Length: 269
Image 1 (cartoon, rainbow, N blue to C red):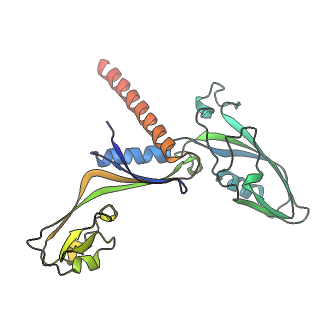
Image 2: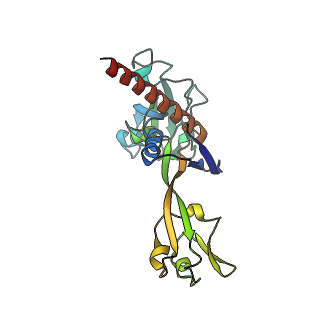
Image 3: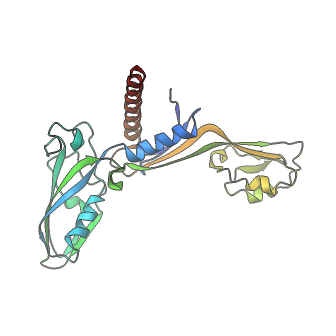
């Protein structure tokens, strides 16, 4: 059973830190890759230009539109390859976005309109192109669900992890010279009551660089990684962090069930 412990959450920046308890490096990496590569989000896949006499070529504008993060509703849309229409295109697997603008002025993401209010640019003030007087941009874009393993525009966010550190100080060997504190880049060590101790506020910041060990002439410090992992997840905004983790867990469970069935079939044969 997976156990997660929340460390820090910032809803304004869509960023969360948590501890994956009693796990292994292989499972931690599986979780990271599932989030980046398997959790589907909405992104523009095709663009049909009606008019474009701006300074940017059609291909450049299409590329910009493809990288615009779009808020995602996983309950209302299917991945095209898994849809009943078999990828031909229907209201259950794709959404049309329209844009019509005339210069002078900057065209922003907020000027893209859809019939589904739940799907819209996450950052309305992202500029698409600057139009001069009498320049026109008119297009229709098609957004679909996709996965990050196909293209990074379908990746829901950035995630990384490290081993939860364990720092121990042998007070019998430590003479409180303070050299380890000077060398520690994360302020994990501090002086308290004339003794070198581990800072409770900065223990999680330790990234196991061993600078304190190398600077300690008495070999009084031991630094090691534990079987807990500190994860940091930053969403690009299509889904919130909680939704990303829930979807990743569903995908992992489905893959494990599928693997279990295939294993049973292999044994029977």
